[in-house]
Length: 511
Image 1 (tube, one colour):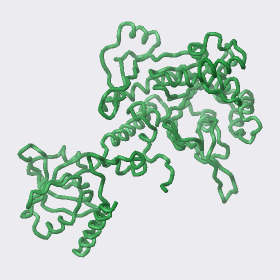
Image 2 (spheres, rainbow, N blue to C red):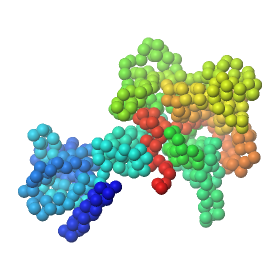
Image 3 (tube, rainbow, N blue to C red):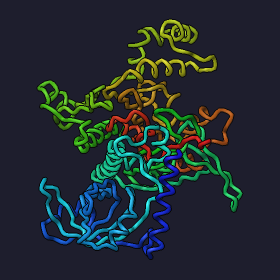
Image 4 (cartoon, helix red, strand yellow):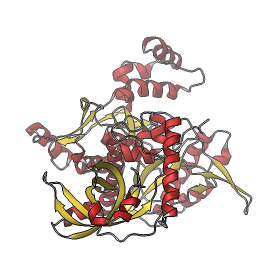
């Protein structure tokens, strides 16, 4: 700490020296010839170009200096020589440090090793860095510091930066994919008078002017369905949701979701759409080295594609690698993805007679034979769900659509025509995590009212009467889905924690 304080003091001394020399340490705008990546593309020996960026390396050769100048798009080498820029400019140059921003004008030339370089004939100080950056090769060793000071993590950790660049691609491609299929992007309220669309604890606030208690949304579902009532056929929203619940490797109180609704479709069509979209995204970011397409689909696979009515493609795999570059898991995305009923999956892990047992027998088997902790207050369907989560969900790595779940789990989905105790839904599981739920939406207003009241119990104030009023005006049959963007990014980049894919995750205050 003392060494760092000394370095900061030295930089502040240089700051004052710049001002004493009539140089503004935090300069104005600087006209460039483009980003550094664009300058490298324009590079032609003898050409005069202007570049701006942060100094990230300095090689002192006495009267000449080689520096690396970097911006968000890349790096370029610059070369300063005392006889070229003059003694006054060299004095100013002596007051610069790694991390400072400068703008340069110079002639393009190639070094003896073929390195594209700008020979500086003038430069401007654009911003003085008053604190030293972490050493490039070691970066931030404290994991929490990486999240708390993400800007330093991005500067010094190429792998971390690559994850967020891929996240940008994922979001952009989702928009393009859906818009190409006729979906329109909409915006719905974040502040809501009733927090609905999911079973979760909301954050509460108050609007002073109206004297109104409001909630940060936990899901946009009920507003998006109002748009189906209003005549939109295909809508989607990339939205921020907020849930006042725990933090874990897979959970952050503020997170990003995609929700989309498609009039006249059902959960089967929605599953096909989501499967196609995720494979498309994986192909688009294949250059990360974590996703690869290989070989040709076998004749058997080709027949399965034909039977499913899906487009045939080469097998696609996601590779998760560790820090040393070793593959720790490969996930097979080859289409079509497996689909299996909830009850069948539970029987596979808990016994064929599971649903013929009494409630007490199920508790007994779960606790003693299956080794799952069952709290006394859990309802019978929750006991089964615990078994499912521990023995099916957490142990499933290749894509699996779990279909026809108990209606108690999904109060906004349509009952199955053959078995009203089930609903027409899927839950997509990949890598032990639920990535996306999708439903055939419930559009019967009376049935929806009953289901919401069953879910709310005594807390009837949580019922969104405005949503039910909208349903009474008629909502077409529809399919809808949600997709967690943070978890999807974890999947496609191999990130181990949701904090690694959120630029500024929520953290405890520093003490």
